[in-house]
Each structure stands twice: as C-alpha cells, then as structure tokens.
Length: 291
Image (tube, rainbow, N blue to C red; front, side):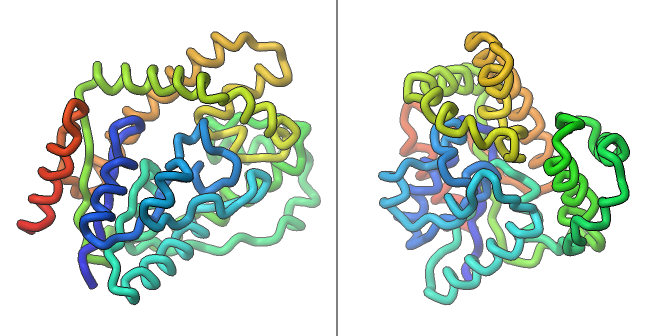
C-alpha cells in the first residue's frame, strides 16, 4: 500500500486547497476528516469544499448524513477504513484531510470501540438524572434539561458509542502527516475574515433553512459556526454578538487543534505561503517524494 497522506492543521490555514492539488498530482482521492462536513446542508458555516472543488477530484465522506442523524467517531472509523481499502484497491493514493483530530486517530490508529446499547436502558431515569450524568461525563455540553430526546441520545453517545475500550498508540498504516501552519496574527485575521465572508455568502440563509431542525440536531447545537445562532433564532440575540462569538470560538478551536496534533501525532509542519501557494505545494511534494 502506498503511504497515506494526511493533511492537518487549524481552521483557515489552506488544508482544502493543498489536498486538492496533491490529489491531482499524486493520482489521489480525498477522504474528509472534518466532523461537520459529514452532514448535508451545512455548506457555508462548515467551509466544506465547494461543489466545484469536489468535482476536481473525488471526495469521500462528505454529505453522508442529515443534520438530525447521529454520527460518531465509531461510525467514522468504520466508514473511513472502508474507503481507504477501496481507494487503494483501485491503485489510487489516499489523501485524508481535516481538522477533527479524533476522527483521524480513530481511522489510522489502533482504536477499539464499544457499540452503543439501546436507549431503553434510560427509561427509568428522570431528565434531571440523565442531565447530571451528562454533565459528569462532559461538563462543556450545553443541552436543555427538558429536551429528553437529546438528553438520551447524548448520554448514550457519551457512555457507549465514543468510549475507547482498548487503545494502544500504534498506527496501523504507513502514513505521512503533513501539517499546515502560520503565525498567530495571520491565522486569527484569516479566521475573522472567513467568518465575515461566510456572512456575505448567505450564511444567514443557510441558518434560517435549518431553523426547524435545531432542537433535534446534535451537530447544530455543538458545531462552531452553527451553535452560536441558537439564541439568534430563538432568543433575539444580536447578529453582531453572534458573529463575534463565532470568531472567538474559532480562534479558541484553532489553539486546541494545535495542541491535539502536536501532542497526539508525528506531524511534519509547513508554513503556508499565502502569497504564492505553489511554493507550499512544491515544498510538501518534495518532502513526500524524498521520504
């Protein structure tokens, strides 16, 4: 099997563009590793590859779930490994790209999961007890105590679908992990500019089209670029406050991405040349070919 190319890095650093150019030059196909791009109709706020970009080279694991459906790391592991096998059988190069580090590790490393149990096991629990269990497992989850359907689904996911029952830090494939980076000032400006561009590209229209699904959708209530709009839609929050919150959350997320990739993976980092992206492409290609 040819080495799998993995492209990681924080949001807004050029991962999508690099993945497409490498796929063209290396006879490759792209596997999405962004947890939001899995979902249909989350196009602008997720900054997923455009339809035109997806036509340039084959893309996989994009738009495979409705926003009201659950999709776990366990699901991604199975789907990604199946796609990797299919691509390599056709003598194509696998290029995995995205910022969801746990998806990448689950696909490539020796992660083993327990399949979820049935929801009926929670029938004897009150909403308050379920809520308290969720908070004990992950205090950062924001969920309304009266939404029993989401409470049960969230607790089931936390207790089962994404529980690692046996893990060794052994990678299962031959992999080259490419990281794109830039200075903090440049990155933060690009993040802020991208959020502004999303608004110009009709993000509000996209959000309004999803309004009826917010109360049943885990991804809409957890994904940056979407969760911030809940109070705008239902509690009269000002749009400027929403935009500033998205920018802030995106910057904080970029920090967490750096921490994860630096601590969890053996990444070869490259500074993105935004003035002449061909320099970045050639630098990465030279590294791949030398290795």
